[in-house]
Image (cartoon, rainbow, N blue to C red; front, top):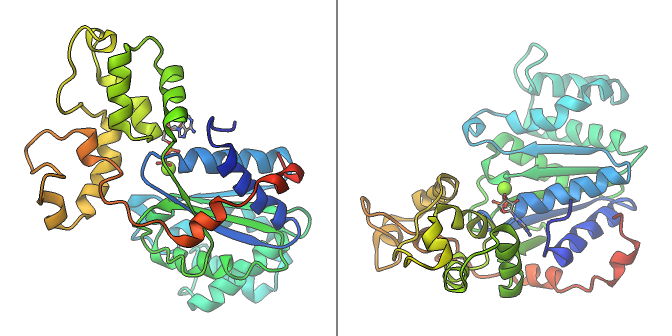
Length: 311
Ligand SMILES: Nc1ncnc2c1ncn2[C@@H]1O[C@H](COP(=O)(O)OP(=O)(O)O)[C@@H](O)[C@H]1O
Ligand SMILES: [Mg+2]
């Protein structure tokens, strides 16, 4: 299902699908935690499936980041029955890389070339949509292979979309990949989402939540859940620091952990340890990197071409 309020962003992603059916396209979707990257790539995957395109989905997992080729394993495991379609030595290379054949893993170039060959073979019948979500968590070996593939899609009908956190891509070096930066929802869309997800809030409460959430969908959905009935109705004032749900805490904890100590504890911006911190203090706007020029260029592209889109 299409996430509400993201029509133009989804259109840009759909364009990747359209172009992939004529030749490969790769793209990196960046954004703050909770801004809606997963919702968007899920919508893209649904769109591809609706048009009969196989979807290969990889999700970076923090606990597997030290496991070499664990993300590549996710990508290739569903394709193992296709191995006979590529040269036998390349099939063996992949089996060794995924530890389903004896022998030490071959070199990175051999693995990358074999993985690309397999993807190309699979995309011969139908365009394939590859989605790599939480790419900032994928292991280094897989990241190198996936980026090798993403840069060599010309002539093969693959849409290759990676989603990662802004300012922290882990082992994913986007270098020359096109990037879309997913911005927070605009005020109107943020209000719509809040009103739909939490009807009946007092206007004062709603305004405060909109102010604190700064257009972040996760915050808009979860901050109100921490309020009691009187606070929701505007009969009791809200605390200076709004309490965080467990999910908001965990999503932003990584970000706080990665900030340098000076940024983390310096100035007024983040709470010192031991003090209860609010969403605003942990939130996504504090250290947002400057927008990349190429992102804006992509974002501002006319969506008129989307008339011929897949969805
Ligand atoms: N445009 C949107 N409309 C409604 N809900 C949204 C929208 N974007 C994201 N969400 C919801 O907000 C939460 C966080 O979104 P998610 O895609 O997981 O963020 P990210 O992957 O960027 O961390 C999820 O519950 C998701 O369903
Ligand atoms: Mg996500």
